Length: 175
Image 1 (cartoon, rainbow, N blue to C red):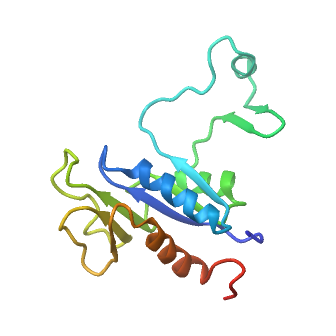
Image 2 (tube, one colour; image 1 turned 90 degrees about the vertical axis):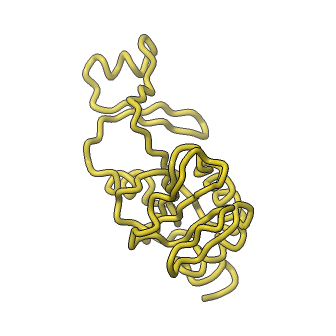
């Protein structure tokens, strides 16, 4: 669907074990079924090493390659040092998507959907006062100010909001 436009980015935020990954999975399925090209990004504070010591790509990088691209018939994996700000990386690597859903990155000034569950070990949401809060997903009585609120299973309505706000209409339905 993307016609050389900059993709939209929406952050899925919340505290640990709040259901961010589950919501991401549901939204990706729903929006993909509607014809959108959805890219995903996962933030981690952990030092993840994608190259295993001794493997060919690790050996290439260890020998001095600035980047190492692993290619199969249907997939690619890129291992490359990249110190640019996170948002620049989103657009650089996923610029051909219609929508980028990024899990985490709660400090970025981008539209956010917060997930907050009553069975989580946390007492309060993290972004209720954030001006970038776009929507709130919860199974509690907590409600943000003016932002729309959705239940944990109300993925279709949340996808409707994203589609209407960022794209105007479903592909094939006209603008």
